[in-house]
Image (cartoon, rainbow, N blue to C red; front, side, top):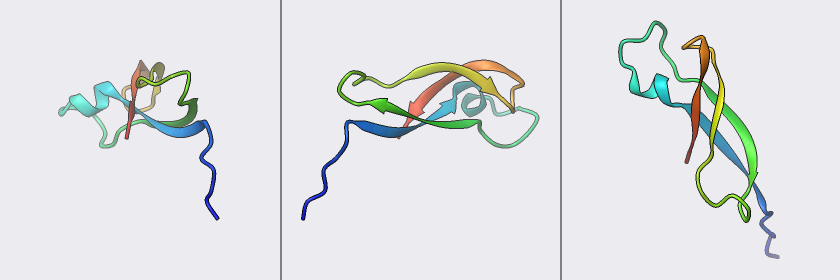
Length: 64
């Protein structure tokens, strides 16, 4: 029996400043998980969220 794929999928958002900055204070990258509608939003999401490693609001991009 085939399973039906839903329209909403779970995605992971990753901080862009933590990923690109080598000389940061603490190791690790801030990540959030959320869902998106794959029919309405076909491109990758970019949301401004709080990063605990940078201690400020930064842009978080969708990763695979």
